[in-house]
Image (cartoon, rainbow, N blue to C red; front, side):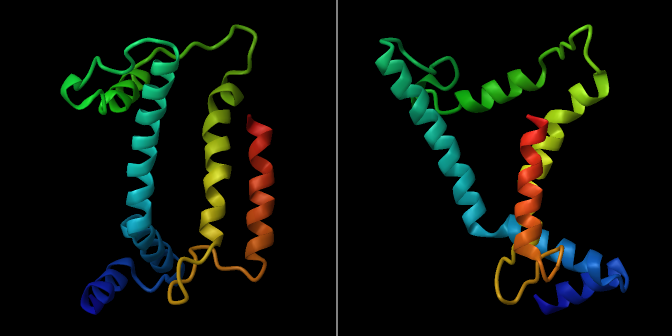
Length: 145
């Protein structure tokens, strides 16, 4: 493990900020809690769709993976939504119209960069006013909604 970290440090050069960012993001992505959150979110989405279908007296998500109760329907919807046509209103500013959703997501996720993952791993953006900066970044997100 230590040899891999030293090799990564050699590859990235002596830039400490890039090194800490790559290591910090690597630990956050490998962190088992993140994987469990993604799995739990997918299962809750599936369960919510099934419950709504029962309340509305219909079958629910069964077009994809009928044998396992439509559990893969969320992924099919993700693929379908990613290939939809982008419709831009005529009298709108094109650049803010297209950038607003991405900026809203960016400013919602960016405070994670200020939060330490463990006592041994420093956050990618290390600051003495980390909590204040995280709250300030969170308050910018509603502007883009």
